[in-house]
Length: 110
Image 1 (cartoon, rainbow, N blue to C red):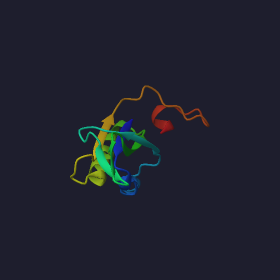
Image 2 (cartoon, rainbow, N blue to C red):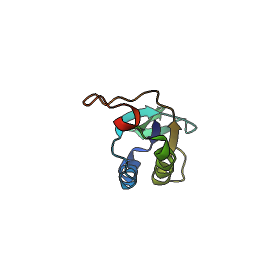
Image 3 (cartoon, rainbow, N blue to C red):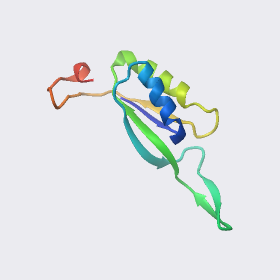
Image 4 (tube, rainbow, N blue to C red):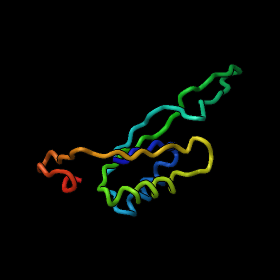
């Protein structure tokens, strides 16, 4: 399972890049969070507000072990702006995958 947290405006770039390498399914969630950025301040009608949690996009992509490293490299390349807050990528093992419709398991279910 490759989980990536990226800047919202990079979603289309990442989706297109993943499509080019053959990734067929992605789960996308709108999330909020912060890392080293620690948020920022904004001015609204003359008052300053601290924005602690920044809008981000969370991608979840279940892939085979053989494709995982390529997916990580593709996301990193497409999501990178070189500025703080570009995001993070996490890779975890999946214990079991089941396609509900057919009953296929693990690699066949992906």
